[in-house]
Amino acid sequence: MKSLEDILEIREINRWVRRFERSPHQRNAPHASDAELVELGGNNGQLLAVTIDTVSEEITRGIYREPFTMGWVTVMACLSDLAAVGADPLGVVVSVSVEPARGPAFCDGIARGMQAACRRSGVWILGGDTNTSLSINLTGCAAGLLPRRNRLTRIGCKSGDLVFLSGPAGAGSAIGLARLAGLPPELFPESAYRPSARIREGRLLRNYASCCMDTSDGVLATLDQLMRLNAAGFVVETDPKSILRRDVARLADFARIPPWVMLAGHHGEFELLFTVPAVKAADFQSEASRMNWAPVPIGRVAAGQGIQLKVEGRLRTIDTGSIRNLFAKYGDSPDAYVRELLKCTL
Image (cartoon, rainbow, N blue to C red; front, side, top):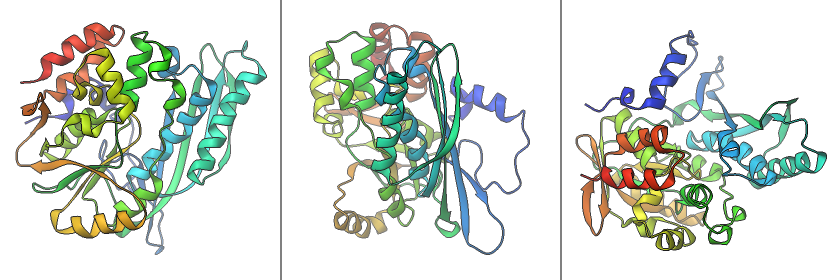
C-alpha cells in the first residue's frame, strides 16, 4: 500500500497538522482537497472554500525574475485551488513583503501582475498587508462558495473513470528547466509562463468530475497524490508529447530529454487534472464543447495502485513517489535531477 507518509513534503505538513485542532465544521480531511471546505451553518446549502499560497522559493531560486510574473502567480495560485473544488470566488486578499531596497517601480510591477490576474479571472483584491523583509514573500488568500451537494475534492475516482487535463501541460517544468539549467531565455521566455486558474471549467466539473486536483506541483506529482488518496491506479495512454504545450515539447527536444520528463517537474502550471465516470463522459464533453473548452483526454483509472506512462512508445510503470522526493536531494542540480529522474521508470 502506497501511503502519503512516503512523501517527504507530506510528512512535514502532517507534523504541522498534528499541532492543531481541526474545526468540527470542516468538510475535507487533510490533503483531500485543494481548498479547505467549511460549513457556513443555516440552510443556505453552500460551503465556504478558502485557501492560501505563498510565492517565495520560486523567486529566491531565480525561476521568477519579473515582478509582473511574481504578482500574477501569487493571485493565480490561490484562485486555482478554488477552481479545483469548483468554487465561485468571492475575492482575494494579499500580503506583500519585499526588501527595503526595492523601489516603487518593482512594487508597481508586482501590483500590475496581481491586477492583471484578477482581471483575467473576474475577481477583485479585497485588501491585504504590506511589509519589509530580507527576501520577497508574496501571499494570496482566496475565498469562494460552492453548493454543498456538488462538493468536489481529490477523492472519489473509481476504476474505469476517464482522466483528463484541462489543457496542455508542462509550462511549469519548462520555465524551471530553462532557469535552473541556464538555458538561453529565448527558448522559453518568462512571458510565456502565464498560467490561468480554470475557474469557469471548475464550475462545470463540480457537476461531472469524480475527483479533481490542480497541477501546481506538476502532472506526475498530481497523479501520485490522487493515486495515494484514492488507492487507485492511473494509466496515461496518451503519448506524453501530445500532452505538452508545443513550446514545451520544443524545449524538451532542444535539451535532449524525453517528453515525459516535462510532466515530472516539481513546478507546475495550474491546469486541472480530473476524472469523469465513463457513463458521464459524453455529456461532459458535449457541455465542454458548448463552452469552447477542449479538455485533453490522457488515460483512465485502473484497479490497484501504480502509475503507468508511455515511455519510448510503450507503457511503463513510473516510480512517482521517488520522483516527488527527488527535489529535496537534487533540486539545486538540474543535471543530477534529470539523471536520477530517468532511473524512476521500472
